[in-house]
Length: 143
Image (cartoon, rainbow, N blue to C red; front, side, top):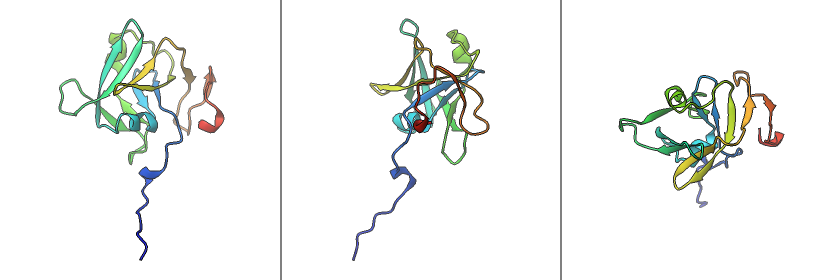
């Protein structure tokens, strides 16, 4: 008798690299790969290194006072995953005049984006994938 294995959606490798978008109103959007890199948490704490200009996200329990809940904008846990970051971006003077997407990397359990890099300016994502207006460093196959 064969030993069957149940195939689930989680077995499919993620097609995209981790990215975080700082939206015009200051909300922070993690793509599915970024959320997975953090261990698919329900909340994060927001970190900032003002000298290096690096934003960090660290998975945290939802009952911690300074936890920021993550919610799936696409429903059914497909992403993108939003973090209410307006107060955070205002406090640190982070530019939100236009939506910009940054590649993200993991560093000792912290998902990091480097604001000293220009990022990729993106337009609305309401009708499918966001359009890239300038500084597009992502190949079409990865969009």
